[in-house]
Every structure is written in C-alpha cells, then in structure tokens.
Length: 148
View 1 (cartoon, rainbow, N blue to C red):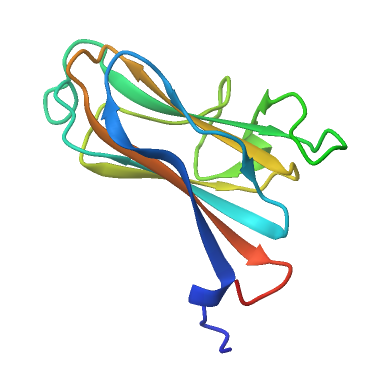
View 2 (cartoon, rainbow, N blue to C red):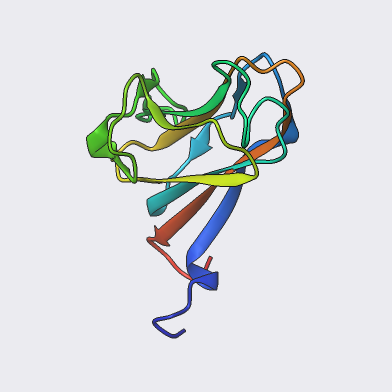
C-alpha cells in the first residue's frame, strides 16, 4: 500500500438515497463511525426547480448534522447538533446547520472532526414545492485497520 492509496482507506455509506426533495426534510439513519477517525459528509443537489440562478422567494436547502455517543449497547444515545468545533468547512454553525445554499447542481461538503461514534445527516428544504433530486453520503476515512 502506498502513501497515496486512498482507495483502501475509505468506506462510503449512503446517508440519503437519491430521491426528490420538496417540502419535507430527508434524514439519514444512524451512521456508525466505529473503526474510523475521520468523516466527510457530501450532499448532492441536482436541478431543483426553485433554486439556481433565480431562486424563488426564500427558497433554500440546508444540511444539518447531528452526532451521538454510543449508549453502551452499540446503539446511539441522544443526538445533539454539531458545533463549529466539530466540523471543517463552514464559517459558522447554527442549530447544527453546516451548509446552506440557494444554488443547485452542486455538491455541499463538510468534514466531521467530532469525537462521537454516530452521525445523522438531514437535508432541510425551505420554500420548495416542486423540488428536485438530492442525495447524501458519508465517506469514512482514516481507518484504525486498513485496508477497508
């Protein structure tokens, strides 16, 4: 394995399977980071009707990130919003919102630095009626045991 070998040192997990987002939040299940020391959360926004070059009204899409400790049984305890110290990328974090955009056809990325075992990703739409395609995944990295 070479120092440039990323392929054997990451594992991808689907957070939000590809689907259409409109008026309701789309949340992931529990994403278990056991065995990994880093994570990158990636959300993909496709061609969303109310966003893009001429956003409609207050239309936007936000990415919310929460984390939780192991409750002692291998399941997550209570989830809490991440803070600025837990992530790489955003200039500010309010209420766990790590990214916000009025654009579409884009990737939103944030690194997770926190020390919790579990993550939950939620895509939060505002002002979307027709909406459009979205997806999100987590790339788990820096494994304790490689290759993955």
